[in-house]
Image (cartoon, rainbow, N blue to C red; front, side, top):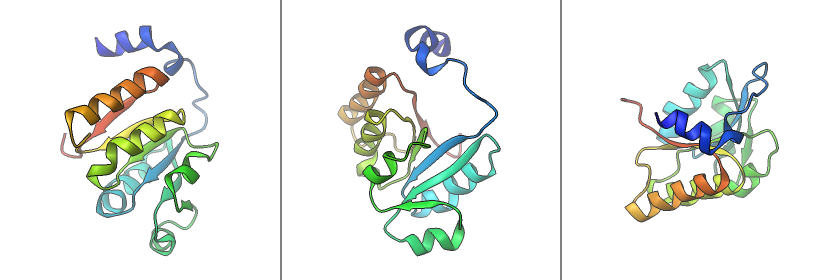
Length: 143
């Protein structure tokens, strides 16, 4: 039922898209979650293309993934035109801020667990998604 409601309220997120090319993904954070879970999952999915990673350690990212842009800041990565989806795998207390930044930049967002550090932060993220008309969801690798 939620999908039907979403399509009715936010038709711009469900319009026909060009499925011949993969979705460009930006990953915020290359710690344990980003490196061990998100980057490998994204790279294994045929409909996704990991285009950029936000990390302070370019060498660590390029040791694992040679052909990806490494951005020093979230703002730098969000400015890349080929990023359609952002996966937030930064430290837990930054999830809401990074999600809202990505939503404000017009990106769809997947947030690693926990979704937010507080109910207020969670509401702020959902409000941003509704205001911008983008999809936001939580990721939990055991669900």
